[in-house]
Image 1 (cartoon, rainbow, N blue to C red):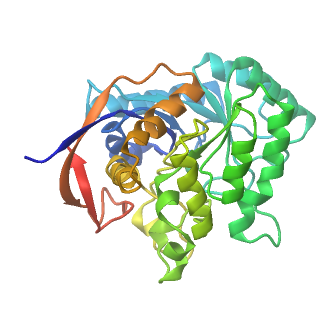
Image 2: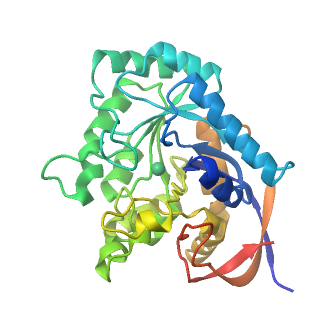
Length: 344
Ligand SMILES: [Zn+2]
């Protein structure tokens, strides 16, 4: 008889579900392990910017969920994208419609961020951030700046002074540095007050720059922020091993079609949802901290967001399985490799 491990369902605090046919195809993977997911607002053609967008997108996700499994306990948590023209009233309206967070993409740093934020320090942005604080909404940051003559590996480091300034200016605003990827980023979040946390992805725990460009160009490992050096990855391990409640799961699972990844200018994003639970279980076993997984994937993020504790569970069966080469037109993370678990 194969071993079964029972895990608390996850809160995936950073997830791209896209929309339309892609949403309907990829959602089922997250539904197998997640109780909640914070759904990113950078959808196309229409990003989530307003109350109408929130309601429309949440309805679309719930309809897709119910079509897959009407008994599912999965609940999407909604966010809006904060742009230069986002007003305090738009924040209050978004909150009323159920959005729990606002996401900032500095202009040009990642997928669909051509219309990202240009000026974090304008007087109107100050008012908008005050409204987020007053409404109890979280501020989620894609913490990179794509500046002239700054190497891709240092884009996160470029952003950190602004993170510190924000955290000190708004000690009562909960701020999340998304997908922290560098030693400096981990240290900065660790040193700031309890209003600042960071999400960590599975792929940044497993990859370094070598896995992207070190042995042939591997488009399915290409993502923002770029996986960094061994030393940076070690800092992520240590952040997890310390069981600091400031570091929790945000998979940043980001599906793109195979054609969009395998071309001259490939899209950035790693589709990790199909392997997330299995590979995280393997990772935490390998570092001898299986008991840390529920804190990282279920408890710390839920606490930071102020959500009810997760009671629901799911089972993994200890049985070797092969990750398929393709799922619904998307190449999943770790395609063609073996996992030690599968869903029971
Ligand atoms: Zn993302």
